[in-house]
Image (cartoon, rainbow, N blue to C red; front, side, top):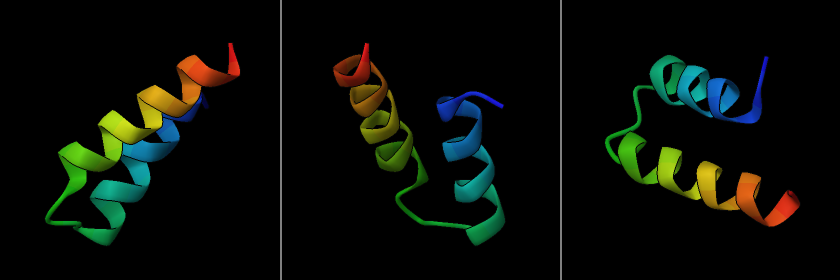
Length: 34
């Protein structure tokens, strides 16, 4: 499972109101790690 998939999964599981923001942060972290 990729980082983005993990973030999407956690956001869905936790039903976060800011899930889109969480995904954006996840993508930013993924870019920083490249």
